[in-house]
Image 1 (cartoon, one colour):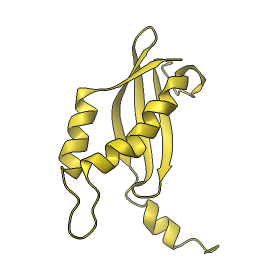
Image 2: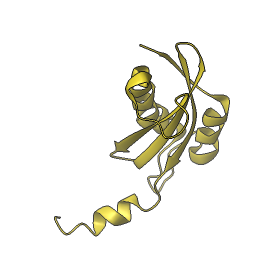
Image 3: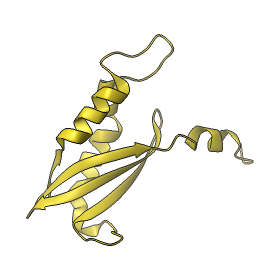
Length: 105
């Protein structure tokens, strides 16, 4: 099992993207992100050696579907033996539109 950390750039991105408070319109907060999809990513990257990679085995991705944030991709980097840093994440901006258009609804 790997130790997993959140990198400074990823942590800063969470703060810049969501902010400390939920909005009046229901936009989630930084805390919601840390306790939801980012917590799931911290657990998921513990199994780093079993995640798929494209070109470099030191960089792997983890895909998460969250009921509030939708579809996300996290990038983890092996920074030293046994230690993975979550370096970045992206939220799929089209996920909720795609779900709305699902003919099986």
